[in-house]
Image (cartoon, rainbow, N blue to C red; front, side):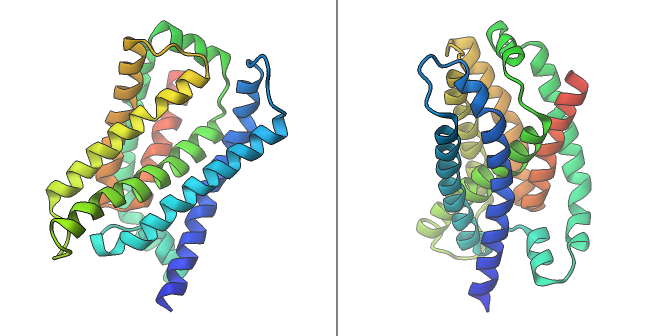
Length: 247
């Protein structure tokens, strides 16, 4: 029964994350290919993107499902919905923390957008990333990869090998994992910026890493204290605020 619950949770989380993969593959990949002189067939590029992302999401989901419970981490809304106990009681305590962090991170993105390097501002005019892609991929897929998968694994490693699985992880381990995952999240945006044509100059690298790392730290604390869904809601709200206020 326990294994069946974990399988159902994993499938539900994977499907939720893949919605973002599908949207961004169908809307952004064609725009990138249009700027490449010798481009591969669109269908092949989209299929390859979905396949690669699907495997990465599956690994992240597996890590979270396998490791989170023993660490005191979780996805309480998904778990409640799948168990039939009702999602709303699990979601309600997450709403206010998610709203506060989402508005704060969104305001931060708006301010950063006004001081972005000229090169990145030009790219923003070249590529049209729809709001749905930002909400689904940024809000759901990235949180599944970076918090549910990576951060959980980073907490588990010292808990398993240093703390020897005794009790819940020490706060220092969780905080360290939050910051490491956030820094990696910021750094992993650099290949995407380069693929879109940005030169990785010092101002661009600094802007991309700082602009993504700081909000990611806040999302990490939400995941730790409130659950995965709080981080998802805050991340999606941040993008919504950045688009609606910054436009």
